[in-house]
Image 1 (tube, helix red, strand yellow):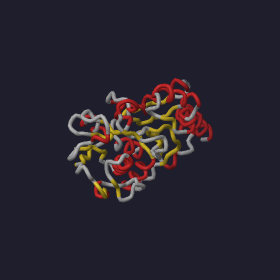
Image 2 (spheres, rainbow, N blue to C red):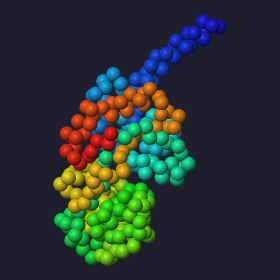
Image 3 (cartoon, one colour):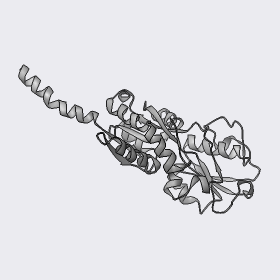
Length: 256
C-alpha cells in the first residue's frame, strides 16, 4: 500500500512541475496579448499560453470558471464593479501598464470646435463610461455634478451647453462607430487595434495621473501560486518596462 501511495505521489510530480512552469492567460489583443507575447521571449522556460478575447466580460467569466489561470485586460475600478455586480472575488496581483482613454473624431480637429447637438459615443460599462464623462468635463465640454465620481453617468451631467447627445456602446464597438458620430471616447487598446495613434490622433487624452492602470487578475485563492508569481516577475521587469516605452512611444505607459 505504501509503495502504491509513493508511486502515485511520484507520478504526480511532473504534473505539479508543469503547473508551476506554465500559465494560461485570457487577454485582449492590443496591447495585452502583445505584452504577454514579449514576456514569453523574456522567460523562454516559462510557458505563457495566451487566450485572445475581444471584450471585457468573457475574460472574467472564464477566470471564475477555471478556464484560465489569470486574465489581463482591465483596470481595478472595472474589476471592482464587475465583482460587485456578479458576487465574485477575483483579485488583482499586480499592475502592468496604463492605457490613457482618448477622444477621437473624423469630423472635428479641435475639441473646442465640438458642434452644437453633437453626437458623442462613450463606453457603456459603468467605470469606463464615467471615465469618459470625466475626460469631457476636464476639457470643458460638459460639467458634471461631481467630477471625482468615477461612476458618473449621463444623469450626473450638470451642464451640457452644446446639447450633446450621448451614444453608449460596448467598448469594442466605439472605434467602429467613429464615422457615425462627432466624437468617440475610446480605450487605447481598441484605438490601437483600429490603427489609431493615441499620441497623434486623439483630440483629448488622459494624462499619466489616471488611476486606471491595467492589472493582472486571478481567483482569490490563487494569488500565491508559483506560476502567478513567475508571470508577475517578468511583467514587472526592467526589460518589460523598456519594451513598453519603446514599442508604444508614450501611447501606453508602464504602470509599475
